[in-house]
Length: 133
Image 1 (cartoon, rainbow, N blue to C red):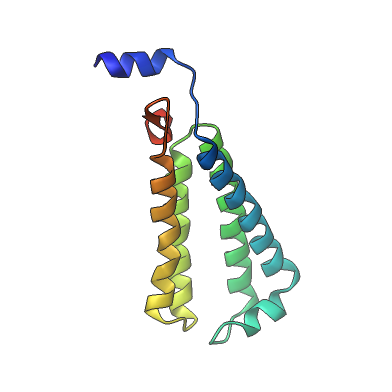
Image 2 (image 1 turned 180 degrees about the vertical axis):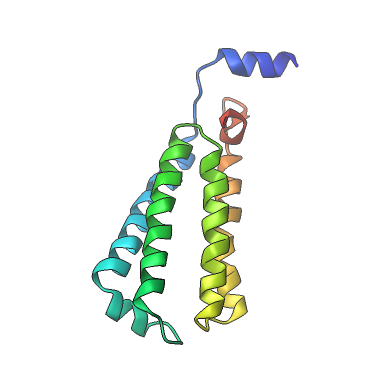
């Protein structure tokens, strides 16, 4: 209990690796969302099955949502993590529905595992996860 009270009295800090990972997530998800919106025809050619414009818009919206969730994590809001989890599950279902093999589709969930692991990196003996509200 004493350690928890000490954590509440110190300013929230995250390790530089956590900050770098969140920035990377913002950049990659923004680029991905834009590519679905601006170059949907080229992107859809890389998928094994037929991909409708509606599906590309949904995937773009998931990318935009992920940018928002990364910003929430920057603001110490745990909702950002749960948002990433939910968009990853939706993307998994979409990937399976358009014919991406299950093994490759499940690799998309690796991002959640990496995010959780990165949030466990400690700064001043406290993981970023513990600061999330």
